[in-house]
Image 1 (cartoon, rainbow, N blue to C red):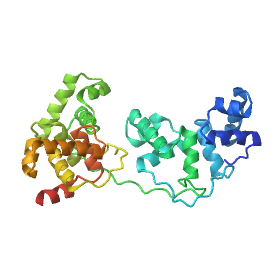
Image 2: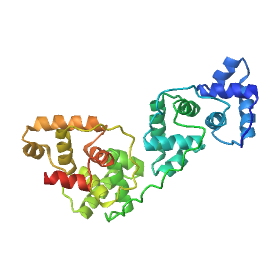
Image 3: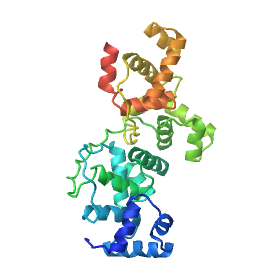
Image 4: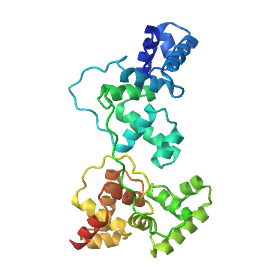
Length: 306
């Protein structure tokens, strides 16, 4: 629905686009806070907006020419797919749980994506993020063509139970066993039992964590785990070799023997690897390596053959 805002309503929406809250707007316009809320309510009623009013009013105002982004000669800001999806969810008024359901992640991770989005755009809230997206050319007045359907994930051939799959997904997120236990409302002892059970299914020996994550990606058990927003730069050849040793679950002494370096040097390389990937644990590094295309069937086979 296209609606024409009154001058007073547009003044409030302009302030929302600057990231200001209702109290700040009331102070700026020398009006009671209730009067500001009333103008927002009436503007939302005109446009048929019933939820997430601030962000969606700003989006509507830009979309229909009530607000005009300043001219820029810079190319549009390129957002990673997950952050672009998060921004789109905000324009549609989706809540954090609804966004999480669309992305196939937990609400906590969906909140993290929003925080990543705000930092990427330099925004302080949803309405401000929408305005900056218009100003940086992420949105245009012409709706973009619908994105192609993503390919179907590979079938899960892991033979994990549902609870084992959740535990392995927690390892892939870089969580400790105690964190996984709290998230799944289990005891740490039960989580360790699920890890041992999953390792038995995969016929793995210790250490379990990174090898379970590797097995989960190889068999499709983690195919539906949404990739984490990371700006991973190409790794030096030595760190790629260390990552390959980590995904195979090799101890530092064996990685050192393969690479012809000392064990302290390997530990230094592992710290650099975790820092380069933004990983918290070795299992997390394996997951991020798969998500960034550094690991995978073709990649691993070619490296093993080299």
